[in-house]
Length: 155
Image 1: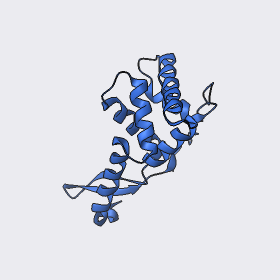
Image 2 (image 1 turned 90 degrees about the horizontal axis):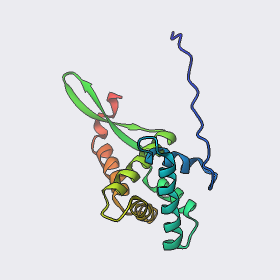
Image 3 (image 1 turned 180 degrees about the horizontal axis):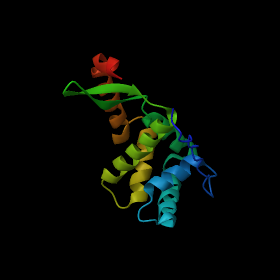
Image 4 (image 1 turned 90 degrees about the vertical axis):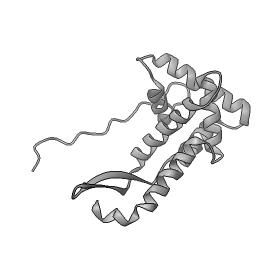
């Protein structure tokens, strides 16, 4: 039996303008070199751009984008008998959300464009419409899990 205490999951504080935890977790992922005010500026400009482009609530567009990109299953490398298998594993909602945020940011950084706020806003709009590189990444992950379903007993 382990003597270590079970750590409690830290609840992220909501951001000051939208009062939303998802926005704050997105800001924390954008963050580079501890420049949180710059990360907030990038995200708020992206939200403003989303409002201008879609004429919808940018928070609902963000939620919808994250929901569309969140994967249900992923593959993990498992070494059995000298060979490595890609084993499909179901993931929880918090880990899925973290993956979705990471994929959205990676896809927006790869986009051609002027600045990060514009690239992020376009990627979020595309993800909310169920297309874009982040959605493609989720579909690719689901396809890999489906293809390796035969190795599910190695969990």
